Length: 588
Ligand code: ARG
View 1 (cartoon, protein in one colour):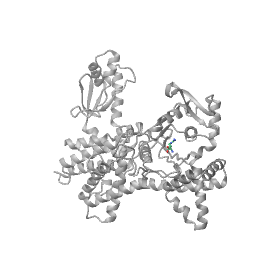
View 2 (cartoon, protein in one colour):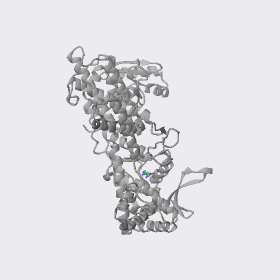
View 3 (tube, helix red, strand yellow):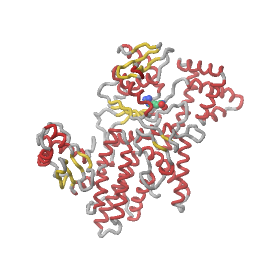
View 4 (spheres, protein in one colour):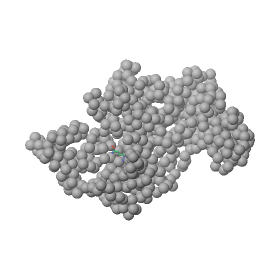
């Protein structure tokens, strides 16, 4: 199937909007269908009649009644009633639910194929600075962006991942000079020194910085190196490439441990725009946007004012001719709109860069680099905090390298898994600990609203209770163990489903709402909603499992119906966690 499977909510929305129009509301009046706010109100409620009636100066209940009489919803709804001032409460029919459960695999589990005519979505994420090693500050962009790229793909969008790594700029002069020094020493000492130092980019950077700060001659050589590098000197470029390759390999090791789907093909580094920067400047100039201010070339737009109402510039070119972060981002907008043909560009970058992106987007629009129909969206996120409420750091106040953080996650998970399953052999416990430990770190982050800061806390993220990865992974393994005991392979299993018990129906409803959640996540960039929905599914499954015997069901048809419901649950949890970039294990 091409295009998006339409969620139940959206189908009700379309039918009831048509009914409102038939009842006399202006065309385009939304029905505002949302999940019912309380049990007893049915499954969904439509709230649109009230606002429309007000504008039409009609009684809301009358309009709601007329709409309901005109509504063509009998194939979906078994019971509908007007409540309160003019809500329409809707209860889905069992026939509708079972038909949806039959189509669950095609509509929810199988990725929707993108419409070939639709413009791709560009997702800019991770984008670390290669002069340093990836640290906890890169975690959020990397995993939120990756989850978003997956959800967009799953819901039928063509996605282009862009890793806008920082591989250019003045720090590289210092790093290359330090590489040169080490290489000279290495000739005397045998070759390993440079390799050895580069094995740890963070320390390498620190040593280079120490040399730079302590030795004026070194600092001067570093500055000369920047000039030579930017002029395209072949030796400098070769050294630079050597450094970039090593640093990129470090990033890739982290991506692979995190299960993040970024590789070299997604890297479109800052340096890739070098040749275009002069054109960016001349185009801005031709558009009449450039103003000289204190020797620098800037764009001033009326909407940006600083303190005391002073106009705030976006600096495009420094007095010495150097370009800036913003210049590169303008070139990137143009490349993404023009060459990549993007219809929407999402930037997963922390909230301290909000002003930067507002300015870049506004200038890109004003200069015509981004056509009006291309959406440019900064998807900001808050900071990871330590227990003290300050940005998360080592005890000594240093940055925490991601590899160290992930090592600790796996170690802690290993201790927990070993405590719970002492009978498993060590290799199995290690593998479970890897999936659970990495999953816990990712889920703790993804399950919070990205805009807020959050406190990084090992104990709560590794807890088997509550809205955590281990809880969901455990729920999944419970479903799998049910199938093992039934001696049935869940992947191929199907049977007619009948929903007799409340717990069965509640679980079915949670499963069938997944497309609504995925659509919202894709639109608003809010993976925490997928997390809480998966948690709701797991809770509904646990309740179902307690209340509705499966293997000891009264008859074979009931047993198979329940197994079929469990099969949907298993697929939903595995797929949902997969979209968050989190793995599952068969036993835990
Ligand atoms: N390298 C930048 C940083 O670490 C993030 C880049 C984000 N993407 C962008 N197009 N500016 O701060």
